[in-house]
Length: 117
Image (cartoon, rainbow, N blue to C red):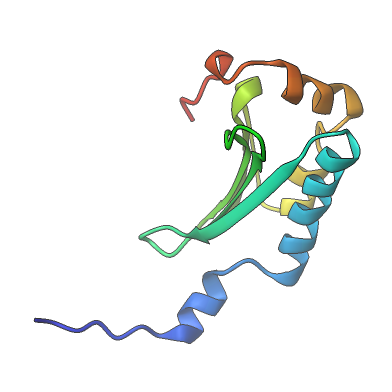
């Protein structure tokens, strides 16, 4: 049996910052204000990069997937079939979250997603 030593300082550096989490929570609250019931979940990939998903509470389907890969941020809106990338999460979180877009999240079936990202 082998043991692994985890450096918690390294994990903290790779985790979401408080500002990142505030932006993601703001997006989740925007969905709730648009009438959706959402749940969230987060974690780290095997490589140690953070991810965060916002799911439809009724179906469990992932609506929006946020990730930081190295120094780049990704926001994927699966049921609309698009992905945004950038060097700053606030810029992604502020892009394309109009009420019309939020309404489409509720109406489009997940089968129309394009998850080749």
